[in-house]
Length: 252
Ligand code: PEP
Image (cartoon, rainbow, N blue to C red; front, side, top):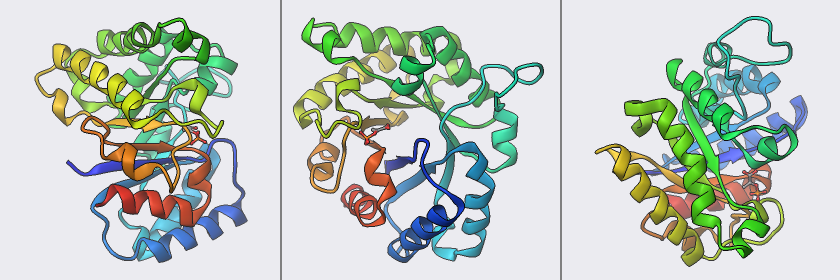
């Protein structure tokens, strides 16, 4: 299966900066890549990125993603953005349960599971983030934590579970420059794969991405691990040459 490289722009960008970044990406993406590539952008910029995709042929295969989605379908939920709205603007993916949302917005496992459910109900692939904090890793709780986080999503989504993407993102590696070693990452990915296998006969088609300071220098060895099917890239996705190098490593 082709690997998936998804950029997470987080709360960065502007009309001018997005256009410059995507124009630079288009120049590097001119040859068809053997990897799936997506950018998960702040919701207000979905329309701009969709328009740039229509204008720049090299971006035709670039997939569009959001960074969050409401757990509710519609109604009196001020500030929320529904899955149907994301779909209207061409989103193919939505990140759910990013550790920054779990940490700063108090998102629970159950809420994350409901967000994944809303996404799936609207034909959007949720990129479900799981990962342990440094304290949890040091206490030997990594497996317990990631399994608990994924179990909530499996429980709420039943047979649709083969439609999700999982991202293992150790919290201590996000934006810190500290990356899990390929062995540490593979160990957790294998646990997640086994958990998916127990839930669906189609577990092998679920992409499990690694995220946490993946960059041009470390991408190839991480992506060479048997259960690492791609990357969720924060900081390095904002620099076209770095993001393109990671895509090239995934397309090998
Ligand atoms: C992320 O935000 O999902 C992420 C992995 O960030 P970074 O690559 O900057 O660590």
